[in-house]
Length: 87
Image (cartoon, rainbow, N blue to C red; front, top):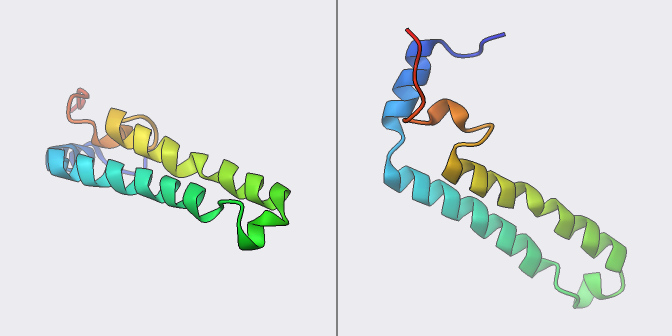
């Protein structure tokens, strides 16, 4: 099942600029860092180490998304401007 036509994919690839890539990557990386920071072992998380580790492990999602955004890995492969678009 194809969700976007090739013209839509091509238009998205043409709109992906360097500043968009930097802001998107930085924002996702910042969210991952905030999750790690917010679960430091004080207060609520001091007495709940298992909960802290579960939430910290979920920070892998925004970290992966930031790497995927920078290197055009899935789910960002459709906006890769170097990818050959078939007509």
